[in-house]
Image (cartoon, one colour):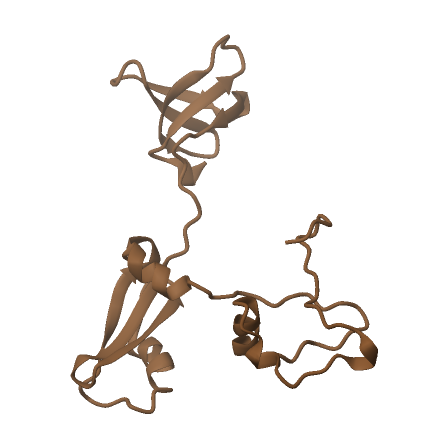
Length: 188
């Protein structure tokens, strides 16, 4: 209960006919100290063994911060790249992780953070995540992995079949993309 200190709670306590509402102000191994929602100056000391159940409408969710790091060079008309870094903060080494791969990197390049992912402008998020695929498709049993590049997949999905030009179906069979299911048996 330690992580709920300061949160509003609704408790069912043995011996009380109705649920109790209040804010958890402190706790130890034996007692939970609840400030009454009705009388602000009243604090209840409730033995933890008597608490049958509780719920917290404003309990903190587990949160893992992600920072959106960027680099650009407006003098060279370089829009740069964005890099998502997990963790509480970032260092110069984190910036170097994605900037060191740039062949046009020089001293005029700007870099820094756009902020945590939850505070980043929605237009930037839309540009960053549009068309991004996380993870791999499952392989069919007994079948070799599909070696088509992401460009070929994008072109074939958009209806432009130029990427498949020159490929012929083997033994009179027509080639169709592998079917993918979401685990329930229905096609995605």
